[in-house]
Image (tube, rainbow, N blue to C red; front, side, top):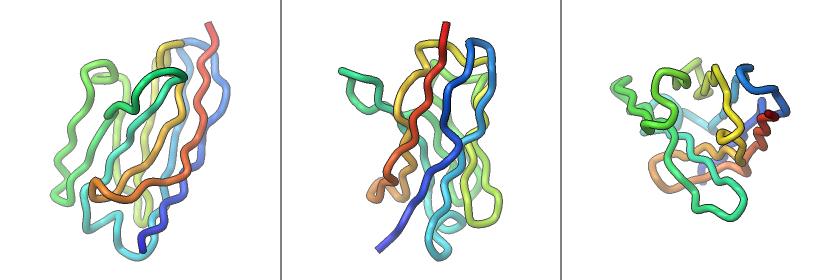
Length: 110
């Protein structure tokens, strides 16, 4: 069983930055594709960013140029800059397309 734990969410003003972290059990972060998704109230969960075991990254168009996904040891990090109110959501970490963390709330005030 893979365990994922997100942290780093919070309240920030428009234009601000937040750094989300997801710690994974064992070697999951370094050996599987890790991704961040988000779900805003009343909306479906959507893809945000992905990093493959090779290091290749991909991003949703809505966050490209503002968010950066990376690995740091046993955790995957999502650096979020130039935040907008529409980035407000619960952010979830995903491993291998199968396992999910509990989520961390990000709120961007206008």
